[in-house]
Length: 303
Ligand code: FPP
Ligand code: MG
Image (cartoon, rainbow, N blue to C red):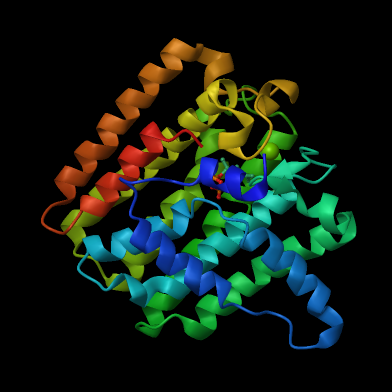
């Protein structure tokens, strides 16, 4: 299968807020990082992974949250793009031989396969730093609100978030010493998804009564995303996933499917989707239709 065909198989279809995905893609495509010719190769590696055509769930979630709280989604594009830079950094490092040792991602060779391990490590490092530069330099808003959003982004991706969750994963600590599967995924995947909503709530000074419901929605969406990810690793096709199916089993990972079996994992997903939709309904008056579409997409996705 050619790359264009593979990317079509992975792409979200109707029922996903594609206009928001397009805003994100255009913004990301315009980003440049290297100021010196000597580092052009590093920028090439960063853009290779960044522009490989992911679903853009995290930035689209941020833009849809802006709409839901009555803001123009374009106002939060720098923050939304930063979420995708950080997500891409995490994928590059997660694929490295020292971690999951994967050769294919988003339907093309992983960064270390294409550019070598040394450059792949630096491309991930560069994306992480440039994400924060982007928000600090480009994100408009009350300075105190922007700082609060940046602090949330750092916390959600650091030791008490994504990086800490990845540590629990690589050391196989889940299932031991009281660290459950839910906790592993809440940190590794859930906090970045949660930050996509939370950072926008902070930037937009969302009225207090709606906040706990948006937060509960985001937390539930993180759980749902992971249950479906685990199911797709068993039931999906390589073409749809853009990476080889069955990687969890090959790595001996504890997943919702290995722990509960496919049928119960599907039931847990249905319950989680129902809770996410309930929280959105409770969040109240705003335009939550795009957030509903995202929840439905995460539940029914095949990639
Ligand atoms: C697929 O996202 C990615 C995940 C399910 C997240 C897994 C978590 C990590 C890889 C964290 C690793 C952390 C470090 C620090 C190395 P997706 O389905 O949204 O992928 P897409 O963007 O390609 O669509
Ligand atoms: Mg991994």
